[in-house]
Amino acid sequence: MVIFGGSGDLTKRKLLPALINLRRDGLLPEGFAVVGLGTTQMSSEQFRERIDSEIRSHATGEFDPELWSWLEPRLYYAHGDLREQSVFERLDGALRLADSEHACGSSVLFYLATPPSFFHEIVERLAARGATSESPGAWRRVIVEKPFGQDLDSARELNRKLLSVVDERQIYRIDHYLGKETVQNILVMRFANGIFEPIWNRRYVDHVQINVAEELGVEHRGRYYEEAGALRDMVPNHLFQLLALTAMEPPTSFEADAVRSEKAKILQAIPPPTPEEVLTRVVRGQYGEGSRDGQSLAAYRNEKHVAPDSRTETFVALRLGIDNWRWADVPFYLRVGKRLPKRVTEIVIQFKRAPFMLFRKTPVDHLTPNRLVLQIHPTERIALSFGAKVPGPVMQMGDVNMDFCYADYFGSAPATGYETLLYDSMNGDATLFQRGDNVEAAWKVVTPILDVWRALPPRSFPNYAAGSWGPEEADQLLASSGRRWRNVG
Image (cartoon, rainbow, N blue to C red; front, side, top):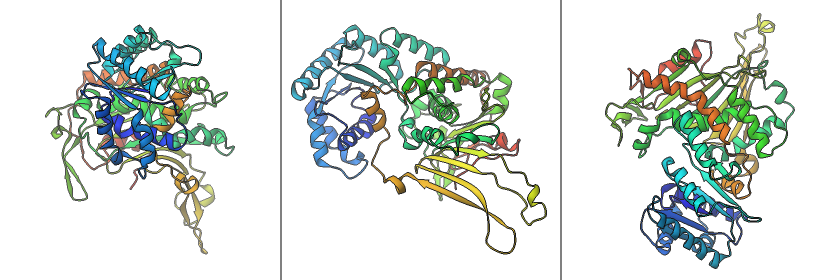
């Protein structure tokens, strides 16, 4: 496994701990090694010492010295500017050394944990050296981190450039959200249980909410966030992948292309908003000063590396539709934001209310709609809420929950969220990775929003207090049709 950006945070915080967990589960072979490439000048031995001093603090469970002693001698390092040919020569040397010491063979997984501007250049240089050429029993695959493009045109251009030197089957566009158990369980829950699929449509579903709320601000990512913003950073990848899994038709099998083709159909069925719809169905926000639990929270414009008059959004809420037979007229509400009251990621399926006529002459004054909540973070769980009679001689109703938590039923295995994705990429299973047409279909919906925002800069920023649930306009997005967000207390 070759990691471009090997001296960065992602490597030590997520990738190496994930590899340790895979080894713990017996899923890494003896003939395995990691070569990190970075701009920091150091030897392989210094790289190992540096990781050794930090790996314990990033372990997802109790640190196992035996597992670390297995991985540590399999770490190698090569330094240099990725724009210079010499770094690729040093990479060749490190790969030869790793193979001679650990019998790794010729299969290589290239992980591009670099700024997007390097994606094509790295792959092009690898291809020019024959490093992406495959032979029987020796595969070569490339994992590409987000963001994959900045808009539709740039995504198309990046796809074109990558496909000019490698095949689509060799490209793994990673989205770490899809490594979560609850996300993967969406397909199993929907298609393996006869009680859900018959009601998973416009006849029974009132609306769908997809919420990704974060307590933290931008922290040390000010420079990146100023260029990306909440919309680019989260919506065309994380949120649209959750939407596609929630709304897709049953695939003919769990083969990668069968699943990804159904996801592509859903994304292609979302009508891109017109400029008028952007103004009425999309809300953007930026957090100002606020507080949580008596602690003051700084405004976004006061964060490090952020312009004092920044127009970058830290919050987005939007209403979308899916123009197909299953979901016609069912609104899908997406919300993502920083500095909100609680960190939570969940999908909410709200069903239509039952007719009230039976309860007209009882103390029951309203019927609460049933909700199915698939929570991805902080707890991986699925909960179904419904009404039940309160014990006693008077007809009264209360809401009850059937709550399934993964840890309670199956135990909890320490994980970073990358284990499944890394393992699948090594085994050639691209089911949880985005295909090129998926990426372009998502940007086709998002780009019109970016165009309107570019022409009409925000006038009211900051428009929500840090520690709140976002701007009032986001609440109105649902309230205008008698709905409201599910805000976790």
